[in-house]
Image (cartoon, rainbow, N blue to C red):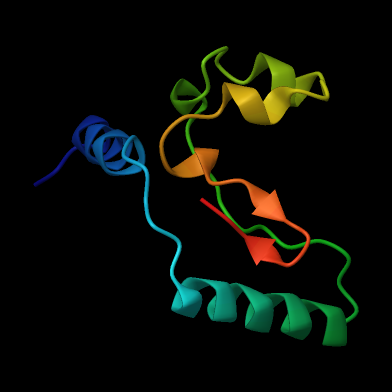
Amino acid sequence: MRTAEDARKLLMEKMSKRIEVTDQMRSNLLSRIKAAAVEGKNELMVLQFPVELCTDQGRAINNNEPDWPETLTGVPSVKPTKCGVTS
């Protein structure tokens, strides 16, 4: 049976590699955004990731620094744009 530590290591391995954002991914995200808006929600969790994938262990995000996206690595480093997401 896999331990929590093994599962975290596997997640870190998987998320430390950049991904190619596909049209299907963009479409799925847009559908989720529209559904959240219809439901009257004003926020949507798109991605959750361990702080180890930030070059500063999440300090810039927690302090709402303007250049926080520059601290992201791996999958989290796929940057959002006005029209969807871009890699």
